[in-house]
Amino acid sequence: MEEVPHDCPGADSAQAGRGASCQGCPNQRLCASGAGATPDPAIGEIKEKMKTVKHKILVLSGKGGVGKSTFSAHLAHGLAEDENTQIALLDIDICGPSIPKIMGLEGEQYVEDNLGVMSVGFLLSSPDDAVIWRGPKKNGMIKQFLRDVDWGEVDYLIVDTPPGTSDEHLSVVQYLAAAHIDGAVIITTPQEVSLQDVRKEINFCRKVKLPIIGVVENMSGFICPKCKKESQIFPPTTGGAELMCQDLEVPLLGRVPLDPLIGKNCDKGQSFFIDAPDSPATLAYRSIIQRIQEFCNLHQSKEENLISS
Amino acid sequence: MEAAAEPGNLAGVRHIILVLSGKGGVGKSTISTELALALRHAGKKVGILDVDLCGPSIPRMLGAQGRAVHQCDRGWAPVFLDREQSISLMSVGFLLEKPDEAVVWRGPKKNALIKQFVSDVAWGELDYLVVDTPPGTSDEHMATIEALRPYQPLGALVVTTPQAVSVGDVRRELTFCRKTGLRVMGIVENMSGFTCPHCAECTSVFSRGGGEELAQLAGVPFLGSVPLDPALMRTLEEGHHFIQEFPGSPAFAALTSIAQKILDATPACLP
Image 1 (cartoon, chains in turn green, blue):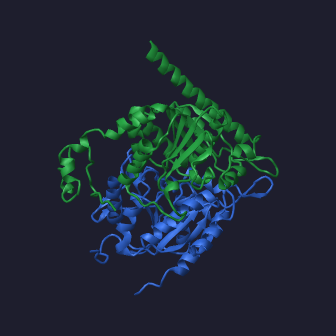
Image 2 (spheres, chains in turn brown, purple):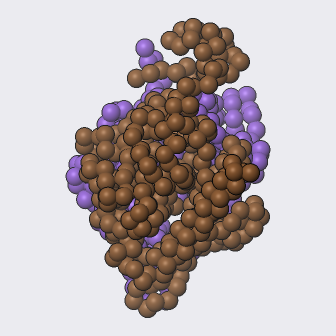
Image 3 (cartoon, helix red, strand yellow):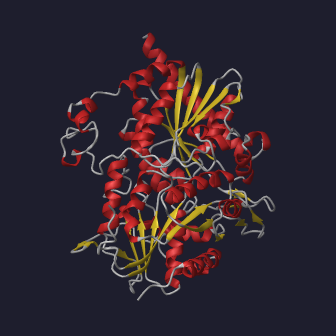
């Protein structure tokens, strides 16, 4: 296991290789020589690879368990319903790769002819295998996914991320820096405990200049299957996503209610849209997906206008 | 070479319990808080350590958001949540100047802070220290276990929700525990069913059965299921009266039972 000194100043910092904590680190000479300060050649390589990928969308949330993977999977399913659109879904949650399960894949990488999936989950031989990696190794894996996977001609690359604002998020933004990310979709639930983390995520996006497509409020209300009355399982005690979006001036793409069939279908690895085409949750998803497409197309036209002008 | 536990800030802590989950959003912080309160209800002196650097949620849950943290001669003084000083808390949340500021750190820097947190908080005499962790099996988790190892933690409580997607991640967490030599005290299944306030129908909002199946599969004790209680969640959100309101919640009975199992599993202290 690679050991990084606990107070490593960072390979690209001015102190790289020179700090007191660098003594004894296997990379000391490399860092002191200034090698860390040069941009990673992989960034250029990834830019080349990404030339055949039209749109790149990151699905983020500061908070865990709000439905990022569920949303990413269904965004992919929804977009892939158009057979002429090529979709790729990349799961960079190295420690908790949920996408294979949600997409019903045990190792095959294509869900449909036009929907391909990549995840570290495919590289694990057993469902009990734990990926106990520190940051640098996780970053290496993400770099490999972006640079070494033959993505081919893809209309939409959707990147599902783990919760937090850490190595994985910094890496994916850094490695895709030259390749232009269309934007981020940020998922939250109505509660303040989620919004608290999502505000941080929005600030993270602004710090790294990642455009925000908008926010999705998930688990927004529950319709009892018996009496059909609505309850708030996760109450929006501080105004929910709507107020947060107003305050931070980001678009609210939509609200998806809690439908127990979503969980059941994810467990079976099936698209929820097929099982419950008329559910209010399906309708909400479809409207959100449309808004995302509109954002991406608007972006594309702007880019084309800039090039042709 | 690992020395035996040096006298230090954790010397007065009798038992350390880590609350883990491979999966995010299953309720680790909520369960950590509820467990701490249930143990306190059983007459124990409890501390809570929140090492979730990216998403420190516990200060708000206990109405302690914005409380100032002071240094005493032995290190950081934890924040006491009651007059009797039977429940205390330390979280990175207290150290953030602006609550909306993201802690965007890579692994090594997180490790350094966790090491500091674990050794520099002047807990004093505690019966139990409940350590809340972020989701995953990475830097923070390894750092926490390495820092706590000399103090021989009692074990880990692993939290899941009933769905296969959660169970899938939690299986990996159990492997992590095995590999790092951390005893699994048991599995807690959270968000086990929602009772409609209008018609009292109980719906399995997040599927069912996963926790118990996993416990059987992995050969670890199943400690219990905790139902979804929106009224309690509202209180947690508002962060004002949770300590008083918790005993009135359906979740309380579940947590009391879980706490009792932990008390039963705790070896008697040597004089």
